Length: 476
Image (cartoon, rainbow, N blue to C red):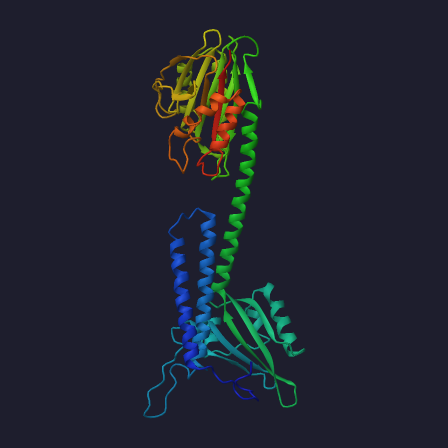
């Protein structure tokens, strides 16, 4: 970069105006496109760290394109004309300063003459440093005084390398303006040699990159926020999984209740996590033998995901087990669960299904709270049991839950599930796909085989929510 004062070589020829104008036009169009993306990103949720990061990247790209536009504009304008207020030859109008009010004021130049100890600054540099035009330019000795203390060694190393070793300068530092504002400047320069090859002066171009660096910092902070959120989500997911595995029944495979005697239930269950969300929900299933010889079957679902949902599920399932062991009927039990949710510290809504099977009479007593009813498969066909009245748990205080009974026969297959099983994106909401499994259930010999059929049908990626399924097959 030749010095304007000590140039000993021909001035470089500017590129044709048409070529520069074309570049400026393309830059403006690209800048407009990026700005449109930035405006679209600003319409979304401010609390989403991923969107904040995307928006910050757009801001940074806009600043880069603004800087490119400035440089191309300066290239088209050539060397700056006379300073504003300069007189024109008699009979001619004073030329308009192309820099006035433009973004070119962010770039200035300076030269420090080592032979005369003189300094020469462009008008733009005065503006960058916040100094009046009639003030004396800062010398190389005085320049570090306006830098932040931690950045002064950076400038010293750059100047020393340029003047002593003849190396080009390229680095950044921060200055403090007289008004107290801080600016980040990027300086490039090189030594200017005299006829004998000795360093006669140093010429530099300084660019105010404060806005650009702020945009880069915003991107960095946004990226760090995204990474923190992802780490928190992974940690919460792991804790929710561990809590769920602790609360749900420990048995895997199949279970026979009661273990001895006729009319026992062959039971199997499975939890299907959501394919569209990595979060664990508040779905549960359970089966246990009660002190009076009857069997409890239950499934349910609480709103929400993550640790709050799984902890609430643990509390509710514990209360359900305790009341069932105490001999409370399913209808009354639903009413008590409703009160538990109403009085909990973190209110939530939930649906539940509670069944009690008597192996001596083969009668199933059951109640539901806003939950899909059991599906009964018999003789190769399936039907939904007519649900007794019951609203969502936590929806209204003092709600009444009715109870119904149905007689089961050997070979019957009873399927209990949460609504996430049949709420699928490709089929909408409904039990039709589950009812279509009736022929396969008729051929199955165990409850585990029935569960396997359900998983094969509903375990695909199109499922919108996590789900539980429990199958009970009535023995002879």
